[in-house]
Image 1 (cartoon, rainbow, N blue to C red):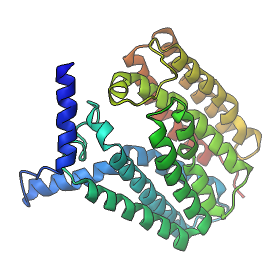
Image 2 (image 1 turned 45 degrees about the horizontal axis):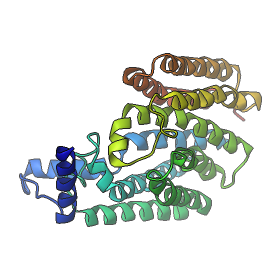
Image 3 (image 1 turned 180 degrees about the vertical axis):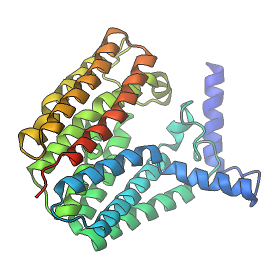
Length: 317
């Protein structure tokens, strides 16, 4: 108990005192660390899924020969806003990150970077991405991207300390990337974009709750309420995971049933979703960190594979 209080006290002092200088100074090793820290702030592992989802939304909405310039501008603008979101999220959560083993070595809680630098960096990325989307793509795309940023930072992030319903709130901006891609291609939204949104909304629950179960002790130590209620045994968590895994069956088939994709996608989507569900069933039977980690790995395989099938088998003019 005393050791835990001492650790939190040291973390708080490091955050107040500002950054520790990089030992290597301006030499090559120092520059590598400096660049790696700025890269880490953007949450690149999250941005990869954001880009894949945005690309899928754009491709599914586009008709005719591909406008590669518009696609690249849409992806770059979305990447900048997403990177700004990740950076600003780490700025806002730098204290709680310092209390978790998984995140304590990040640039801000470790003291390697000044929080003011991260704040300015995040704002420049977000505003630059919003400007690019507004001027080079279309205003609707920019508005959707910036609304996603605002809801993630101003609603989801603070709610993580207050209620397990934060996962539901966070799933709202989390499902936006394919809608942003759709808006970039067409300049308007439609029911088809809504179907993509619904798929990503449901997908996030097994993904996020699987992560929350693996790191439940870390989250508890930092005061983050990511799991349903006081779910010590994980029963409510796995029930919620299974509800949304089962919901993915009809949701994932909507593009085929609506005629947007063909039989190849229909069979592939059903196979992928049933395989994803199997990982959830295994976690229901034995709520271990190993099986939760396998579910999370399955989730980051499932989504790109499903979106890839959509793009491969979409209805062409």
